[in-house]
Length: 106
Image (tube, rainbow, N blue to C red; front, side, top):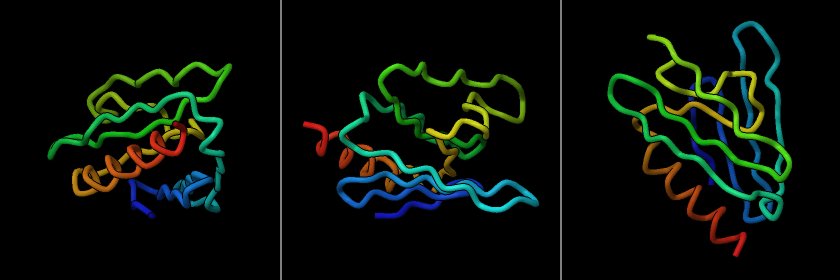
């Protein structure tokens, strides 16, 4: 399953989570996380006014702090490799992806 985010995408094949981020004017960066290594997830649904995000937590690393400000809308910074901002239309798909990742960890 592959879900389009804001300037990137996140996919899950049953074992690996792949986050691809595209910064403006830069090559896409790909981050792969093994689902068995995930200790938790954070999902903030997007609203019609602000993007939401999905974040995957790994052992020994603290979750990225949500940026505050009128443009960030309470999301982790774009430089965080374990999170992706999502638009409102991707809420349902991300919820299913997070559920699939959590189910795979059980």
